[in-house]
Amino acid sequence: MHMDIEIEGRHKNSLLHREEIRFEILNVKATPTRKEIRTKLAAQLGAKEELLIVDEIDHEFGSTVVTGFAKVYDSAEQLKSMEAEHMVRKQTGEKKAKEEKK
Image 1: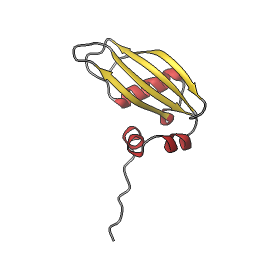
Image 2: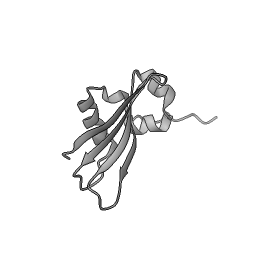
Image 3: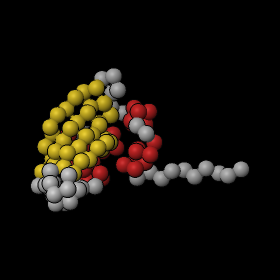
Image 4: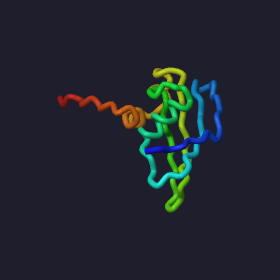
């Protein structure tokens, strides 16, 4: 899917060791997946894809504009300590380790 991402705002959050990005995707017919957005946004920002989390995607019915919020962490350790485990798994495609029953 071809998409043009415009960066609406960037804020360096030194306390949480991340950069927070507000973005807008124009002229879309269907809401792109988090994976598609993550890949394109990482390439556009020059960031490592594994350190980027797409936190929010908003697409109103009938609109051709998608807005969103993403976070780029300084390190994988910071990402894992700050983000919910299920969000990290959802975006990286990791599978949850099954716990053994006793």
